[in-house]
Length: 465
Image (tube, rainbow, N blue to C red):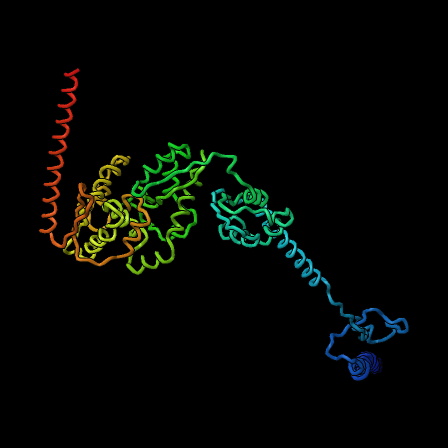
């Protein structure tokens, strides 16, 4: 029994000692941890001038501290003393450098494009080769010539042209008159053309187109005088597109026309050169027509409700119908009265239109088209034909624009007397027709009698010999 009691006493003592040893380190650790939290940690935060900045921890051990001996350090090695460090802020230069490089590249590219564009314009590179007729007025300055070249689409930079002209000392050498230039010519070639005279290099040919000729007759005259080919002239004249003012007023629908530009070969005297380019010949004629159609004529035309093509078409009929220029206004008046009364007079009934349809259009058709023939024949088709039947002179054009008022709806020309008879009614017109027919019979009879007398006299003279 005594032994058992001794063992129990010994166990109690050992348990008390164990409890004291197991709790003491924990109590010490808790006390130290609380002290660190209330003193060192908070003092570091309070001393930080920038409490909002992110804190940095020094993971390296301090030289004057023994981390191994400290109970807290031994129990939790992840805990480290927090230190306050100043963070240096660096401003990056990369965005500024990129912006500067981009700006330099952009300016360089723009300058390169400008230099290339001016260089191509100076050399005429990449531009079309269409021929343009330029007429330089007497006493024109380099500024005025440069503006004309820009307006014609020959150059793009008048200032550059003026500078080039001054460098070549050509400002006082430009020659007034007609010159042919192309957009694909270099500035130097353009200046050479505008400062040169070509009359001595080629033979000059004087050509006169009479009033009332058609485009085929005009083309044959040019070919006979060795100016250009007839077929090429007709092709280029109908093609047009030379930039003259009147071209903007032409119709776009020409399906019923055999020759788009019939009526615009303005009757006049021209000076050409032998073996000219067809485009150059066409532009000289276009230029003449364009100069004749003044603003005053365009104003009258619009007041009458006419298009340019209608004006030239009606003038071409008047040109062919009127025996003399004095009667043109009254002939035009008759056609005006018929056009303004289509219910009573749906057809103009002009003989020259029938002649043109059958004698000019039909022989030149590659494929016969009755629709076009009927449209030109005013005994078949109503109103004006789709195009001119000849090339009228300025008198016929002005006669249409005069729009003289009358009550006449008929007229007939007496080829024996040269007089044109005008009538208000069909009965009066038919009476003039009978009178003229009678005079024609008398003329024919007298002509035959004269021929018979001449033959008899000739035979009597032969027998006498």
